[in-house]
Image (tube, rainbow, N blue to C red; front, side, top):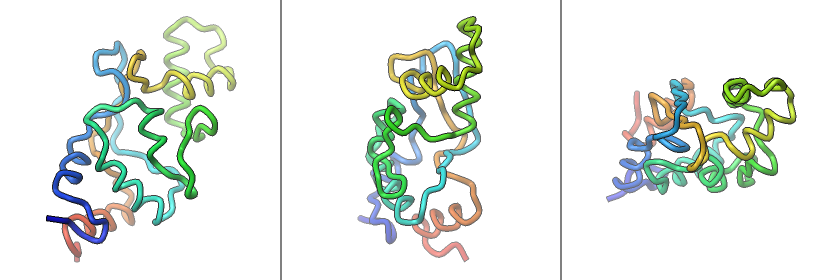
Length: 152
């Protein structure tokens, strides 16, 4: 059985809904957000990324998971082109300060923490969300309509 125009199977919908987060759940620091951020994703990328998230394991390495996601039609390679996500920068600064790094606010160190350490399967952080999809009104309506039928 298939759901919607996204052609999501029941198993893919269950994987999206059952996604727990990025990193190592036994890590000493958890960051809990309200919803998945989607950056400046266009509708085509959002559709493909929804399908890709349907293949995610319950827990993923942030870097590895993002290689399966697209932005502007290209894979999101956090090591080569990390997004300028302010929340991730804040997380990196907190973690660097936690390590007693005197230069916790240094832009290069923050960028490198995001590129190589944030949300990694063997790292010191676990990133999770209260909701596995975005609550942006236009996207929420799109996703709900695609998964559940017309929300009207």
